[in-house]
Structure formats: structure tokens, C-alpha cells
Length: 164
Image (spheres, rainbow, N blue to C red):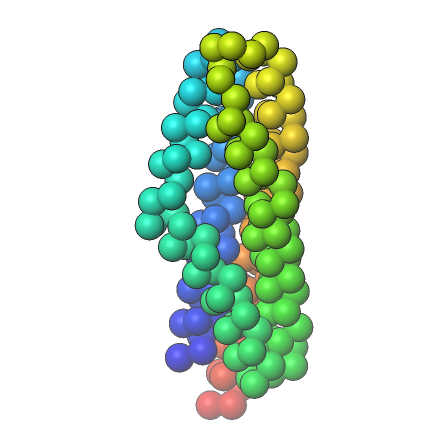
């Protein structure tokens, strides 16, 4: 049963990393190639639509799965626990905390502006530089966390097969 938890946590972390990778690699660059007023409108729409249960469910359940994997790892084997703890810290700080202290405040500031009455080019440039930098952190942290949970699963399976 714990192997399913480890696998699920790894997959959820990788899925979140993939979402953030998409933003860093082609969504934000594509928005940067259209007029700033349109890019601001599009990002505002994305920031509303992100509150869908599929994304938010994955975003909020994954840290809980990380904690559960770390606890299960400590009960299972010390080596597995170390990888799970590393994954938990990477995901918790590098994804969840970065989103809360970096990306969400920038999204809130963007939502408050009227793209038709401000210097949209300046506001968009200010927003994208900080937002994308934080998003790179979330991408790498999520992927590294996924790697840690995959390694935790490998250790679990290795010690399970040795015991059999």
C-alpha cells in the first residue's frame, strides 16, 4: 500500500512540475509576443480559471501526500525516509511556499490593474520578469521532488523484494 502512496506522490509532484514547465517554456513566451493589453487580459483569465477543482485539488492534495509519504517512509526504512523528507521539503518550500509568497501576490497585483489605463507594456514586463522567475523555481522544485519520491519508491521496492 505504501508503494502506491509513494508512486502517487511522485506522479502528482511531476504533474505539477509539468504544469509549471508549460508556463515557463511556452505559455509565458507566447503571451510575451502579443500586445501587452491582450497578454494581461489573457493572464487575468488564466488566473481566474486556475481555480478549477482539477488543478486546485492536485495543488493542495500533493503537499498532504508529501507529508504522508515522509511519515510512511520513516515507518518503512530510514533511506526511504530521507528521500521522502527531501521531496517533502522541495515540494513544500519550492512549490507551495513559492506560490504563496511569489506568484500569488503578483497575480493579485495584476488583477488590480486596468490594462486600458496603465502603461501596459511596463506593467506586463514587471509582472512577467518576477512571475516567470518564481515559476522556474516551482518547476525545478516540483521535478526534483518527483525524483526524490521516485527514489523513495525504488528503495521501498528494493527492500520489499529483498525481504521476500
